Picture 1: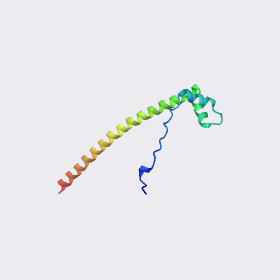
Picture 2 (picture 1 turned 60 degrees about the vertical axis):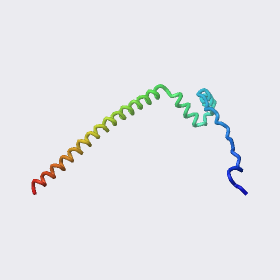
Picture 3 (picture 1 turned 90 degrees about the vertical axis):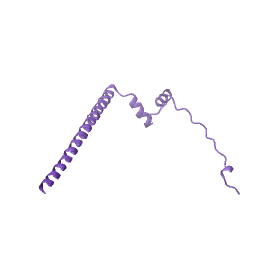
Length: 103
């Protein structure tokens, strides 16, 4: 008996359906029962009050400002590291010179 791959038939899968449109998603959200949590959470986000939107905007702005500040500090730390490394190399050289002159 030959159990090779020639005796197996390939199964052809149907193509995937197109993703839903925004209108279809919104229709599903609007038709969902109150107990459907994933839709309820989405709907609550979509219907946030202007004060919530403003608070999130301010929080986002604060995050961006902190991120920019961290990037600046990162650059400062890199410069300080390089300066300290150069100072350490200079100190090592000075110590070697002192040891040579002591001999």
